Length: 212
Image (cartoon, rainbow, N blue to C red):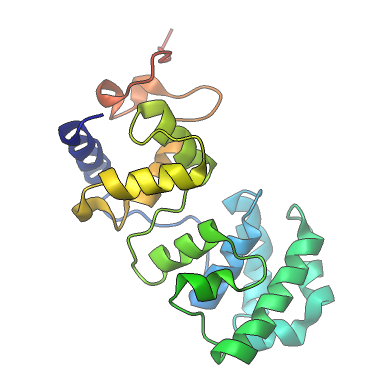
């Protein structure tokens, strides 16, 4: 994709959805962080179902620590890898209190120092909570970037760096949400919905699906 096509690509996504939002439910920066940690290898819908009751009683690091690892585990039992995730949520809550005054830091290195928080999670929090123009490359973005020819790469980090380079600045704030939603609902893994894709003509994917 050339510069003109990339600009048109994001112009169309913006027209369709001017203010894209994460589908994870949260009430503050802390609950956003926890929700993103829990969403690894799980669906947003599954995470939301588990966290509604959890966040109603534990929406701060202090309340989460008071709930204890076992209490957290009981609330997120329906989420994949829930034992390890409960351990991480408890540990990161404790670290936030001890090292950051109970506040979620607006710094990548600090975020990545928290248990269970990797680069992708840090990018989501920086983007959604703090408005940073980061690119959290999940499976959806990785697929869309490679399939369309927008920013092909062999690893999520390579795709992330390419996207940061090619996405025009005016679209950088929302680009990762547009790409996630596009990958989730249109450019799906098994059978992309090419006939209903608003960027079909800009896409380099050769095996496009048809209505037949």
